[in-house]
Length: 283
Image 1: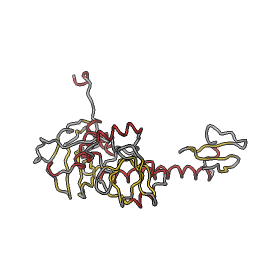
Image 2: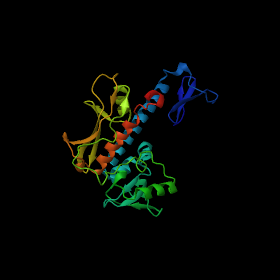
Image 3: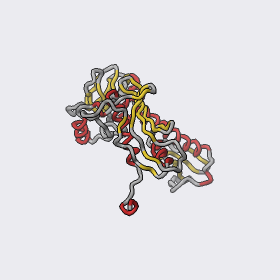
Image 4: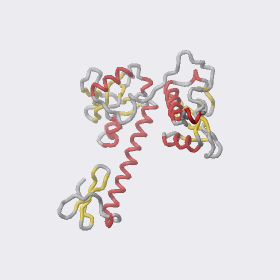
């Protein structure tokens, strides 16, 4: 973006910051206070705010695509790819073809050439599928190999996919149970601290519970953890992690892989913020 006249000065965007230079072309350390209400400055700052919201919306949308392993029409991908916000979050994600086989790391999308990827052999190729998927990492059988390959390629994913924390359901799990106690009993000095951590991490809080909504295998499932429903200044403890579908509690053997992993991820994140007592405090 070029320079815009603002009174006796000129202003422009440098990244997400409004910068200013004087009539001699010397860039100033900051925008003069007398320009704070200038239409050009106000417009640029509003643009920065809009771009930030757009950037976050793109990331949230792609994360929903990944958690649900939803099919993404290549026509849609090609339309959004030129947008830096979309491209920044999509680039280098592992994608699968229509048949579910890992295609490679996403590097481009073009209405004429198709989808550009770096394949498992390290070659850049273009595919022409109708749609692709961004699989949740718990569904990637060769996750460790892909992580090593990503390091070799110098891949940096803006959206957590390869390095997202994943939990596999234990083989010896008692499937008849309705909850997991692994992250229960994490004490917080005040309920509002626990609620604040849950909302900061992006989880909904309803009816005294943190809620993580997941679309898994076409099923709308909610992972839940009890937080507390009394005054925010009272102490509280994290509860067990449970799952529901259409409001009905699920036994653990009925929880699919992605919903299981995301629920355990939520439980671990909330438990990690608990109050840790030192030896002196415990005494």
